[in-house]
Amino acid sequence: DQQVKQNSPSLSVQEGRISILNCDYTNSMFDYFLWYKKYPAEGPTFLISISSIKDKNEDGRFTVFLNKSAKHLSLHIVPSQPGDSAVYFCAAPATGNQFYFGTGTSLTVIP
Amino acid sequence: KAGVTQTPRYLIKTRGQQVTLSCSPISGHRSVSWYQQTPGQGLQFLFEYFSETQRNKGNFPGRFSGRQFSNSRSEMNVSTLELGDSALYLCASSFTGGANGELFFGEGSRLTVL
Image 1 (tube, rainbow over the protein chains, first blue to last red):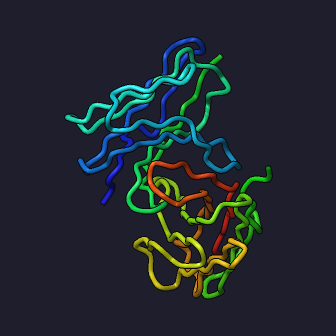
Image 2: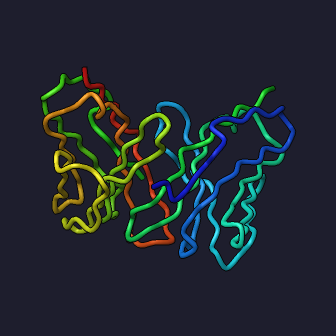
């Protein structure tokens, strides 16, 4: 049972435009969400997080939006750069360090 | 500060064999968790250790086991390998092991079962 879902396996965007990556979850008890970025042959690295008490968190070019009523979050990258090409995972914590991860969205930023 | 180190990075085994993967967490981190990544499945939680005790276990068969040593280093073992065990195995460490924290991942051990 996939508690965190990323329904778009891939996304292509022109350099300089906005990238929007989406994530849905099923458990309304989740109170914290994270986005990780993964390059080939490397482990995932933490990108940005958001607490359920907020509906937006911004860090430079990266902004995460949370819509609790829709159980939906999205990651916006503006402007997109070729170095942003990677696989992006959203995640939510269960207990301890057990996290539920989505299946990932592969972002390609075209120069 | 050294990151999370996983060894070996790549390995090939045949069905029925067993494998042991090693993970050295970031210095000072007491929590180590393991994830399996396969195409189309994202990262699936295997187990988490904190101060040498298994705190959580994911929905994997008993062929998957792990342990943590007093220096926080961790190993995971897979016995009686099956073709479906081919995957990238990722180790992640965290200082507190609590929720609302972030995980620091190693580069992974890519296992191929023939």
